[in-house]
Amino acid sequence: MTQATRRRRVLIVEDEPALRLSYDRAFRPRYDLAFASNGAEAMEQLEQHRPEVAVLDMRLPDTDGIELLRRIRVSHPDLPVIITTAYLSIEPQLKVLDLPHSGYIVKPFRLDELGARIDAVL
Image (cartoon, rainbow, N blue to C red; front, side, top):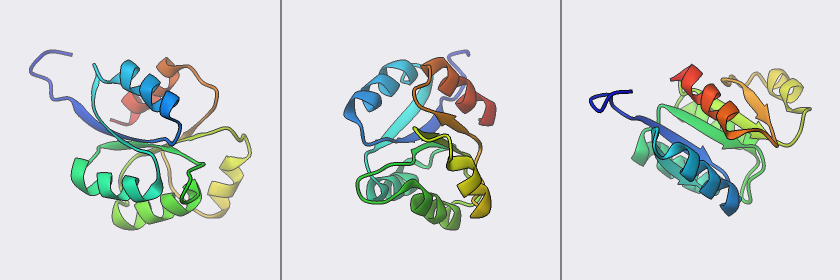
């Protein structure tokens, strides 16, 4: 990436402070990052930050990721969303609910795996 290349905007929705810090350290050099620790903050950041991709944890303190993904699809139907989850069983639920997403990654995962997913949709 050259200095003239525009940094892509990424919103990371994660309620665990230690994970947000890890994501910040790993990805701040590559992307223009915004963070949200719950669904309400995520919806605000979607409008303020205008991300080109969102990374969405399925377990949040004020809403579950399925409901938040529904809300994102209403307001931002074409936004690539990468789901992070500790549960292998999330894919059938997403298919049944017909909630489009740009893939999911099961925790724990390596940060370079998430970076590759983000790069693939940008």
